[in-house]
Image (cartoon, rainbow, N blue to C red; front, side, top):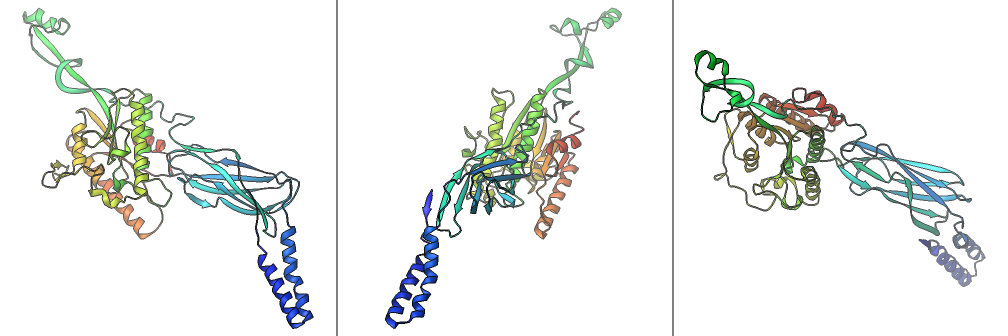
Length: 462
């Protein structure tokens, strides 16, 4: 858009005023002084942008597929490919609104000679999802600022930033669960491992009759083997309002990081044909396509059709819940029902037993425990911003569920508040370890795959 700016209208008014005063007072000096504002007026009127203005822009992203919470450097190079010098060039890169600039600035003001280029550099904080950069806004002005052109300049090079699970090298391709598939029980029946013998009953399989004993004693006995039951891995994501905390503006919330870690593990398990279910706690009806279950949980059973696609919908729903809260809700609403349904009052809520023999009242925790298969192994993902994940881990320990707690560390800065929050979180993780759970303290400076490899030695064989 080309525009003429009447920047020197004040100079014209000043010249007319001086001329009028000089004529009234017959003062030659005032008449000569009118030349000063007239020079500025003439300069602004004659100043024009060169006809051959031509600019090209190229954008490069240091990591087009980063992990959440990782700063990504973006460089925008602006080149003057025309034949005239441009004295005043201003550019603003089209940063996606969802991404916060944490270092540098996407704005630049410079001058460019013919065939000269300049590069601006800034860093954005990666968040889960795919984000598209807009065209760069460029304004070129004359030195007098009376003639300007503003355009949306198409940028070549990198135009998107994707923060998802797609990687060039599968980091956990060989990961297998030692308990994946079956789990020995104390019940006798069909199986591989000897359990006990009993008197023969009509209908017992012929291959389970102890023929050697029959040859010696002339009595029929049946051999029972240790029965095996299918094992299911359940991934529980803490998406409650208290988990939607962020260390600094622009960083992903603890719930989003938890969902990302759960998605990474879900992909690894899916590649190794391990049966895995996904559960998210604390979401609202509008967050999840199709709504929540009757118990208020977002749950995907691995045995259902299109389980992988439905699981990704849950992971995406965690991000929608965080965005919804940032638009108006606060974590202070944690005591209110997320989906608008009334919660159980303290007098009506059932009690959950913890590892230390105490009881707690939490409908969401009760719903999770009620949905777990009896042979499940549970992986909980939570920033441990409050005591809820510790209560869940303790309740799972009482019921002898093998449990792992994956907790992204949100500690940033050296402020007193950050130190207190970090200390409280460390105490919660220690309590979870005392409940015989495997605890993974995920430092965001380290990829989640590295943290899982280092800490899940008892769960994975990598």
